[in-house]
Image (cartoon, rainbow, N blue to C red; front, side, top):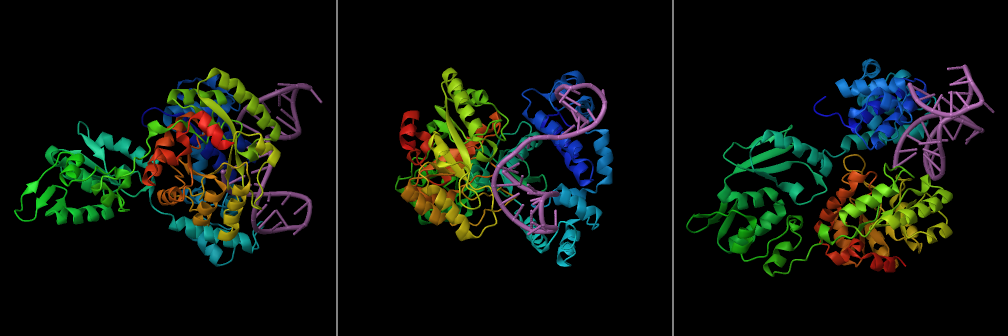
Length: 537
DNA sequence: GCCGTTTTCGGCCCGACTGTTTTCAGTCG
């Protein structure tokens, strides 16, 4: 394997072993042992690459056998049993696990009993109605799988911001000693990115890297301003700015502003110089979407957008009490390091009993005595399929903060699903609606929900809407943030952090907020702890 | 495969949900 083998690399191999064993129809408990080992490695606070077999076996869930296999992964990226198993299960079969509703047991039947090897095979079997009648399959499941295949095929070929970040790390290796910056949708803070655009200073030929997913344009220092402006876009913004430049007698090009009468080119080293030359306020990249920002910039009336430094806390985090990989102590320590006044602990209601929740609160009180950053006793409570909440009212009443989220019944029709959320907002203890559309970028479309109704109702109940800052979600999207803000609905940015490193994802949420024209007043995160407690009560 | 012990077998995380085999199994988070 290239470079240092990370815990995540090891965990991925072990998790793959789990899935392959299940697909092959091996003993499920043996498979589960690999899943458990993978989880343990993921949550391990130290690097597994540095541990010998002896130390590895001291980790719960890891015995002599898996310890040896981990050493093998560290040394050569895989292990013999996995290689052997992989040789017996076609890769195209494994890919079918990416289709929602197709799990390992189902896949075992599809593969072994129906001889299905590829998505095309599966689609043909659904069309030929060959699934119904097989043990465990009826008409409904067959239709559901057909629908899931269509969705899977239509899924957008876009990158999440974290995928783009990973790509950018590799771009750096292609441009040694070259000064470069990222432009395009990435720089504008977009939630999804179809092409990473890079502007480099130098005289090279423009190049495409990584299968056309990265485009590098070279420019001279003296024209860097216009080159960056044009590469950043958006197209709509550039068209509008171009009109304004035209009215002043110039044409905007990557090389500069061309004087329409003389043909002379005026060059600019920075974007600020261009804006100033045209007599306007500098427009932050996040606003460049042709939503009225150009006109406001000429009137020097752009909004004072919220910044990371305005934030005093994070509203969404998970610990080992549910599916997180961090302790209360870990979270408080991160909060201190980030200079936060508070972080809400919001584990899943479905994973935390009422008794465990009470114990957690006691733990929070203990941890709070040792830290500046105060943990809030909260919950991410399920809005269940029938609209009821995951905890009774008396439990919710005792919490500092309640996020209500939809995690099930994602296929319900729009009116039913919307009403579930409206109903949750009616509950006086619910403070925030979590990830309001449920989308997973590149993996799952938003569920059918009428966000305009949600926003209208939030304005009535005073419920905040979450800006989930996980790069896999970024939910709400900018346009709905903008609408919510206009209706006076408060927004609550939360990272949904499951491990300590994820708290820094808040930057993505702030990008979304800025794209939604949010000022510090629009986010509850800018409240001091005492102001927040006031708002919550 | 791991673990614990009432040691060398027997059980393994769980709640909600959905569809199906109508009392349970598989998926998801």
